[in-house]
Amino acid sequence: MNPYVLTILLSSLGLGTTLTFASSHWLLAWMGLEINTLAIIPLMAQQHHPRAVEATTKYFLTQATAAAMILFAATTNAWMTGEWNINNLHDPVASSMTITALALKIGLAPMHFWLPEVLQGLDLLTGLILSTWQKLAPLVLIIQVAPSVNPTMLMLLGLLSTLIGGWGGLNQTQIRKILAYSSIAHMGWMIIISQYTPHLTLLALSMYLFMTSAAFLSLKMTSTMKITTMTMMWSKSPILASTTALALLSLGGLPPLTGFMPKWLILQEMAKQQLPLTATIMALAALLSLYFYLRLCYAMTLTISPNTTNATTPWRTKTTQSTIALALFTTATLGLLPVTPAILALTI
Image 1 (cartoon, helix red, strand yellow):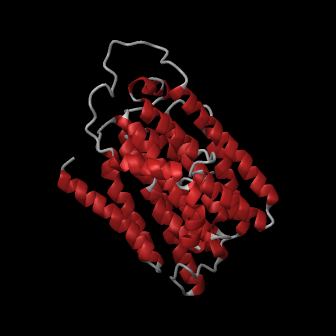
Image 2 (cartoon, helix red, strand yellow):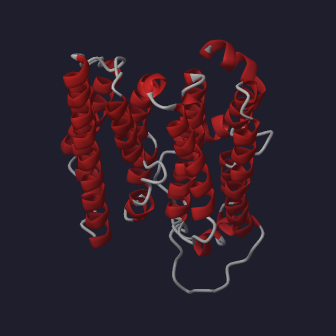
Image 3 (spheres, helix red, strand yellow):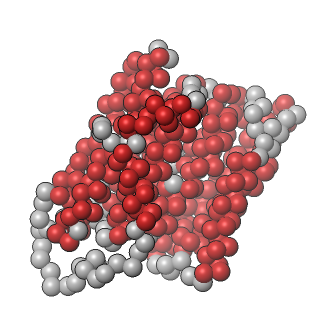
């Protein structure tokens, strides 16, 4: 892609998200979301592959539907209350419609069906943008409207997402689909706590960004798309295989890695809020996710590739990719648990 076009598209992505962050008016927030959607579509379709075009079409249709619902909900709220302010979402129908539309935007269950299919059709870098940057603006809006939404609805969305995110990834062989279900499960953890302590949602989002970036960049480094390809990683790059395995275990929330921190704090907060049953279900749902991360780690570090081939494997040639971002994200993914008290002091 032309570097000037790429610069414009990436700037538009940044602009759309920043506009939604800065807005207190529903129309401005909606406009930011639309700029975001329109900026990523050329990035998704740049491969001119039928799967990429199909993924782009599905993404556009779901995002356009969600944006139309947000606009309709904001108009309904303005009609009933005379307010366009994001924090004054007092009409119950409008608030339910808004949270449903935002859930569709980020792929929360049961509105999650588009996410694995779309992510499967993209290359790893565009998939990384879709899994991280594109979640920011809708999540910030969810945090702002959470106090005026029915708590049961948020809890159901969170529980369903963690369960389906864990369940759906169990029988996948494509790594991008596994990461899509991982994303659904992580979003469930963020949503369920957003009504009680929003700063924990932001903390979980930050850790999710670090861990997902490390996982995607590691896979990009070795051009890994399937579990069978993963089995050849250790023979070429044992250190990268080790750090990728640890990053995946961190995504699963295993101590003493960074991913344990948000899960631990969220479960602790839910126990304080007198929700022991919900906390137990969430902890058990995390085990489902942990199983498929362990499956990836097993394939990557403890198995030998089932077939030998004379063809040059994708990573035999010297890589030209920058490794600075990967090193930084991997360090954050593996080592932030000991500084949890400092991070909490900064966020509260």
